[in-house]
Image (tube, rainbow, N blue to C red):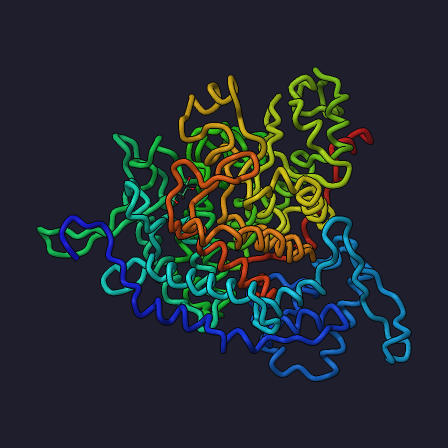
Length: 624
Ligand code: GLC
């Protein structure tokens, strides 16, 4: 590598491996028969991998391994039990798949099954129902239909694997991450670095593909852990020990004649923003790696346990707060510019909750671990109560807020945060459908940020921060407001855009975040994987299928842009990089999950029955 160049990309042999993975021979083995029960449907999509725990609600890494092991030796009796569980779930209607109420159990008199009950899929109002269509998606993707759509989708997958491999970054002969973008036509800025948050969908794609490339994920986790250990100074100030970098790059030190790592903890980032999300994503990816590989030796390493503890100590320390949510500065997440998300943004709270639950599975009680686990448990309970109650907005709750009295004092207050009804923006009154709901952007004294944020809502579903009823309502809202949230190119990072005076005040006249552009109402293809995961988890894969089809019409032709602009996301973003790696990986992960829903288990957590169920809406406080 030449002196001064920032990163060495060594992807050739990987490019070959990656495209071999997606060869028609590989994908053509998928199933075609029409399934009779939910479990059969999933099993047929499943290429032999166990998803019985999707139905039985397994949460722990240990549990997952045991189930997968069991599945290999599953007797017909056991299989029957799994089917029974699925049938029971359709009755109880509160599980992963049946949670949306789209299934009902009827006596199947025509199937020759002698009165055997079979799950009949009832279409949801706007999309036509899921599992049958999910099988269809699988067939289309697997080449059984032999249509042109299949051919172009397969070509697109091949291209995506190639591009992903080209973004690989080498350090001392090992792949340690992926470049944010490989676009030689634009100024690199920091897009030639490995971003922690950007690597997550890349890492998931590597874990989910056939012949999983687990090494790059492991190396990435270890390298970033190593960087966490550095002393982090910005001017005369030293950052907390647990802070994970936003990004790092590999440089060549000509004097010492060796490759070196350089990390950015926010000290060189535009606006000097704090990457609060990095540590959470790191824990989440560590759990995905463990879930995928069953290699517990990594998460159990003393250094890794210590790294997790340091991240958590940053967030669990006592302070002045009256809320269990985490106080953040603006620009602390994927939206890493001033966008009015300071305070208690849902994007971070949902990731915080997710990371707490992942860490809870991986932390060992030895030494000070037990005490930390107790703190985590308490925080998980408090956080879920707070978010499920105070961030939830649906038509009824909006009406409650609209009629709020103010200046209430004491425990009996209904309007706990003294929100002034006049602060409800006009757009939300129009936007809120009768069917559906979502977690709003931020809640603090006299401030409710009613904006819709995609990551916070999808992560809430994946981490089971949202109750099954709330998860269903979030997906309902996406269907009801499809034109606004998905439009012509999935997906809006936030809705709506800040305009005029508000844009000037909130963004500080940011020319990159003008209305309906970039973070301010722009559309980000990377978010497709999150929507897909949430759709599958709630039993609504048809939603993801529609979004994926939209992306397939443009994404490759447009050169895999970072983001799109405009109210409907029609235009390639003003300053969008091309060959943006997480746009590529986001598409791959979405496809890998829709083709094989059991991949969802690598990222999703089931409901923890021990977490106290809160009341759904704040209006319940009338009962005091
Ligand atoms: C931009 C995005 C940020 C991303 C980075 C690299 O700064 O706002 O979320 O991590 O680009 O792609």
